[in-house]
Image (cartoon, rainbow, N blue to C red; front, top):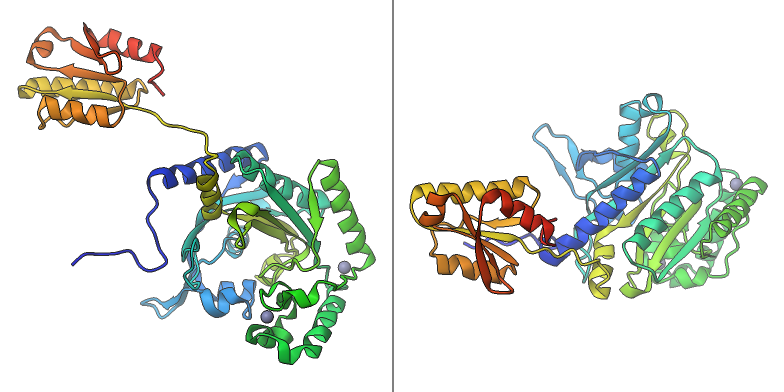
Length: 417
Ligand SMILES: [Zn+2]
Ligand SMILES: [Zn+2]
């Protein structure tokens, strides 16, 4: 029996794993600069949380949610996105009272039982943030700048930022009814999804891949307040040097957004070109049982960013070549060899070795294959004298040194960390 990973799931290793680490490290650094705290929430939540927050007629909940019953007959879901989870944690742990500034970020896996297609996985990773308790348009501007900086610091530069405003409780109904009018007129021509959406979730038709074009002329008539905030958003972004476009059909696939929505796209990925999406959701905390709390956030698709980095080879090379420790001979010698390996690592030097049951020749072959610039060779003779042989693999020269000098010598060259 050979085991295989489940369809739509994959292993991440080698260069791809390095891309993920590079992206995540970059994001952590930038979040710290903006004073965002990391939050880690469970991968599983009660299914009800997502029905309530994301909306029952969205694709995520209708078709893609992983739901199962646990032994206690509870309906459990694997989280399909991070916002609902962070909001649940925010309310449950009373974070609004615990912290004077409430900006949080998360990095982790999400699960959606999507139709399998190239570059799309059922387990994928997102980097996201949620900024609570600030109604100011400057909070919207901040999260857009933050997302842009993370993506650009990952050396992805050909990006497009699209923004839109979905309005508030006052002006949204007007928008919804004008969309409904178009849907009614075109009803027989609509795809099945849009026919179903018409009553419960008509705005979703705007970003339907089949019918989206029918709405390109639609005008978003915002109330005075929403309109003036949207103007401030545009001015603020321009002042911050952000290049952006207003897109009338940008609605996002989730029910909870209000006012600002945005997306960041990259041309490298063809049709699946969105690498980041976000917006404001001023009603969600209240809808999920908390006190009324404004909030704004985004999620970046780490897998897509990693794919761009791989395609454009724009990750900074972080290759390193370990010092290789080879020992052979009696047990005392091998013990001595392993101590040297530990001391190198304790000194912060990237080191490999310890294949002491292999012949010296086989050990040196491994040192060559991993690209070591230096090998440390230890036989019974060296153990007796408490020295080591330091071999320069490029110059093919070697000399005897004492362990204390070994570390200084290697540190003085470029093969440390
Ligand atoms: Zn409004
Ligand atoms: Zn449609």
